[in-house]
Image 1 (spheres, rainbow, N blue to C red):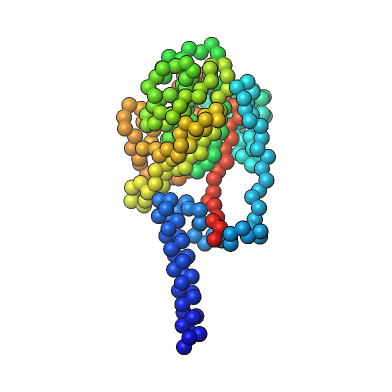
Image 2 (image 1 turned 90 degrees about the vertical axis):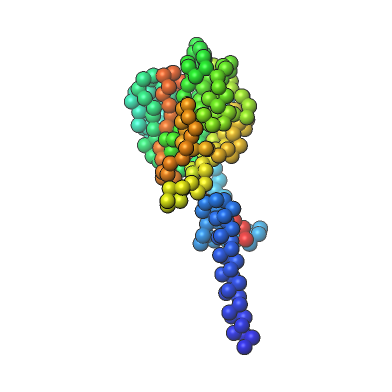
Length: 272
Ligand code: MG
């Protein structure tokens, strides 16, 4: 009868729409990190009952002369009074203002906590008296998941292979441009990192990506890593967890760092 037909049709249609939405969102992003998480609440367009985004104090923007401060909801990894308590390290120096410096030869430092998809901020300075000679004299880098490097290198002035310049995805992509400040001035990186995803058989489901804003200038635009950072060879992927430590490199140069913070990025909820 008609009412029975309706009772059958509406749930079937609704089920189809939900299944299609989930399938489309998974397909569109390549992994299940879509705008609509399965089972997440959905909202009508312009629904006033939809929760307001949390208020965040954005902190202060760093300048060439003075490091900035972190947004209020960030995990501050290095700032005034933090020391190096968030890092495993072998003897790097830090002062009360939260300016840390590589102690050459003591090794890379790694966060005690693990992070995956995130927004990451770091400010770095090459001491004014350092001579930059290609990869020598002013080298460091940030490694996400302990594996994927965004290069730090004094690059004003400095000539080196472009895929090893400041703002490069080391050994893969040069920065789009070179907005590096001279030695003795602070540089900022604002980085959005998405971890790669793997299938259960170890094959790559979605490449890791990175967007890098260097002193306010985009130098990597959602660029896909070709694999785990390698030196002198083509990068390849190897299955790993979607989270890991963030590492800062001791390449033998006394680079300074300040105002390091991270904001883990969760999934979003789509309207309708
Ligand atoms: Mg490096």
